Length: 500
Image (tube, rainbow, N blue to C red; front, top):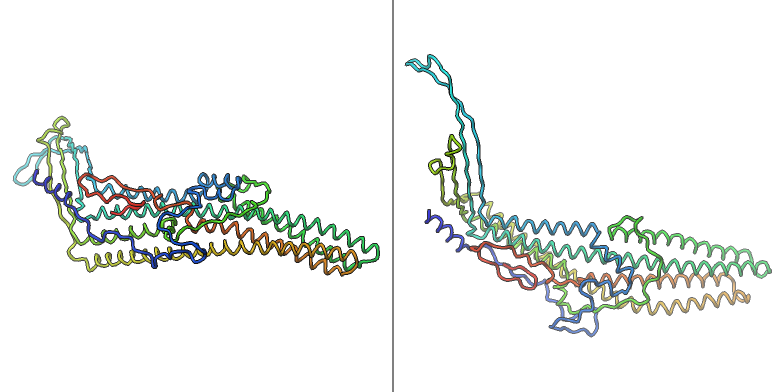
């Protein structure tokens, strides 16, 4: 027995891990020294000055109402709760896999009542019977089974599950960032809708004054009924725009309610103008993007999980070592049940494996390698998409700012033309069609300006999302399951990762 225990201890201490050790592959191409859409930004090997607050990035807008709504996302958003539950499920799976490193102890017991009948037997068989008897039988036993992880199959499984849990944690961060970005977009869409409503109210008031001027001119005999009909048409069309915009605003408010996890009837946002200024973000260095995007972190963690599964598949080529022990007590009386004379025990190791499987194990290893290659391709494509999104948002940030400056000049000119045309109409030097054209042009220019401001506000949220918000890959939980003393420990966690 002592030799058996010594053999088990030796196998536990000398266990190896088959399969490739994980090394993070590089992206498809190395990050460029600077973003294409940023002028004058050079590569800095040290950490860049980060203009996005770690955590509440939306405070860059300086809008208190938005701050209050963002605070409700973590509390009530159901999509976020779904992702959080998926993460907890992944962590539980680690503990489930880790339990295979420890012995499994079982027990059993039973009480059986037996009966027999007596008889007098002759050469030809039973010829007569007498009264029978009955007796009880009591059993109590225990078992121990311990799979010795000689080839590292269990440890590779734990490594895979831990990497998958970190991927789930990154998915949770990505979902939170996406919801926050969607909330910011819906909120500023609502605020821009408020600005449109204000524009339409002002336009309706101005067109009502123009209609009154035309009516007075017609009563004086200097204007026709055509002018009056044109002025009335312009007024009613603008009133229709005002009514349609009210429906748009209601939809944005309902979208905000869903994002903060409430019924639409529970959310009512007072009308207010958007902030006067739009923040401009520094993108930092491209090399930092690989550490800031939770979706990149998720695909990278999925690579390690798939890499560990190669080792799990390769371990199937080697035999399994299991240490089994059992003891059972059997007696017809309870008082003698636990006496050593009633015990039957067994103790010893067991070796089992597969000799011929028709290529099943080879196919499993090949499939695991193919799955790893798939995750590498997904990781590299995620990196490429991330850089594309950042470059797109940087270009939009720059060009929309220039477009707004130009459009403001166009609005000023259109307003002046509208006032001049109305003055000239009153003086009788131009037809009323000139006034209608000027009013339509002025209203369209102001609508375009409002749309540009919406684009600038939403571009900030898009750029923050593309840059990963204030997140870092070091924010990933360092999931390090406790190992038995006899199991080789993985290397320390570095930069938030968990490489075995």
